[in-house]
Length: 154
Image (cartoon, rainbow, N blue to C red; front, side, top):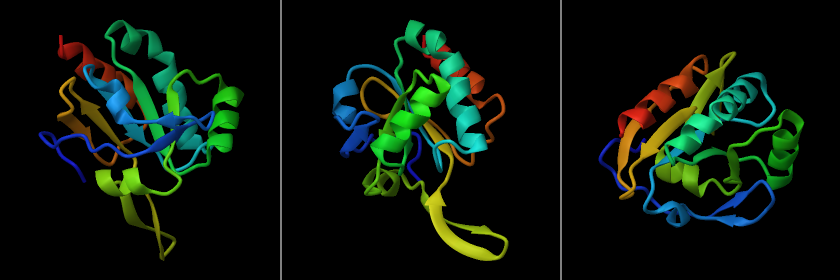
């Protein structure tokens, strides 16, 4: 998994409406990126709703928030619209971004191993350097903790 001090890799994504999205478009401003396993599941819904609830705080700090999963753009649009989410949702259907960040990992449930997205958040500085990483995120109060870190940037 990428760590603080690493440069933000640029890789192609699609937003929930199917439009191209590149991290280069955010260069010059800090950025929060959170990786989540699957749209419209309980934990992922809570996390997206929490970031949306704090959207004004992130906007006030001038820091966009992008949620990334391997879901198709159409599923992300449905997820966004169903819950009124205001964070940008991005599709990494091919998995290149998840691979680059180290969030595509082997998981295990009920004795079965499978590949999936590890829930993680990255705070990236305006210069493209990763400032902070939250690996193995627990959803409750996570968005608040990230906002506090963003506000601490000044």
